[in-house]
Amino acid sequence: MTVRRLEPHASTIFAEVSQLATRHDAVNLGQGFPDTDGPASMIEAAARAMREGHNQYPPGAGVPELRSAISGHVADHTGLTYDPDTEVLVTVGATEAIAGAVVGLVEPDAEVVVIEPFYDSYAATVAMAGATRRSARLVRAGDSYRLDVDSLREAFSPRTRAVLLNTPHNPTGAVLPREDLAELAALCREFDALAISDEVYEHLTFDGHEHVSIATLPGMRERTVRISSAAKMLNCTGWKIGWLTGPPDLVAGARAAKQYMSFAAGTPLQLGVAHALRHEDQWIRAVRAGMREQRDQLTGILTGLGIDVVATRGTYFLTADPRPLGVTDAARWCLELPERVGVAAVPFSPFVDDFAGEWSHLVRFAFCKRPEVLAEAGRRLEALR
Figure (cartoon, rainbow, N blue to C red):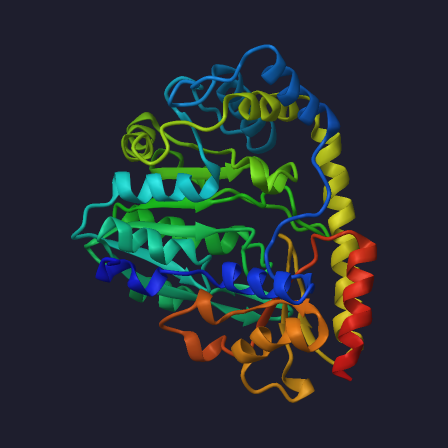
């Protein structure tokens, strides 16, 4: 029998929608995974590592080659420097990095601030830690979303231990500006709280919008756990290679929890990712350009049907409002869509709680698919007319 604190999180919307997509042979624009491989040299480096016998347990913190490559990559792209031996931890994807940080650093009687809408693992992770979740929110600002600073201030209290931050933001596609992050940083300093910063889409920003890590703001490196992943950076979601960086005491807390979750991630895959972080920056930039074109392609398809689309500044995702098509229940519409037209999307309802009424009419579409797949989705969606 599932424990009460996890009963609300027993299944995920991604599993449910992907199952419907498979059953009805639908184009899956619900779950955020690309349909092209990462750089060939990365795959070959992992295969070579297998052939050369690197098939046993790696060190719990990650192979030294990958920890060193992560440290160098972060320094090159943010200016932040981290000691590969004490300030870098390799995890089984970013999801485990988040779980390790929350479970290892937050006491059961503490509070964790999350910002709605949030990636669904955040709520489950806070529940696993036995902590209390407090919600702030994003609000529409012009053609995108920004932090509602008033709700953020209301969410913080003397019991706040950490805030879970995500930018570039899944599910809305917003890229939070430095001004919003400065407001959040000031609250972290005022309440002596940690920032657990999910930055897995750090390289997927568009139209001149650049990602800013909260760890680069004054007084924040020493209180920030910065999380990223090879999955979205290098098109290898199935490899489940993520990492976190931060000061030694915070990394040690996360490692204390993480070592009893998985102990370690796949050795040859870590070596493949290490190679890519050192040698495939040009490939990463090319993916960014391609994703921008795919975003524009799907935006055109949806707006051509009369669906309202919010500007996406980063990530894989478009925020869409299907009410112009007569949709009154976005969650039900998404569950019917695979059978009805052969396309899958996910509603915003699983990503919100305290502010559910403000988001229940919205749907998330993923554009991280080949242009011909998006074109086929567009052909099928024509049935909505």
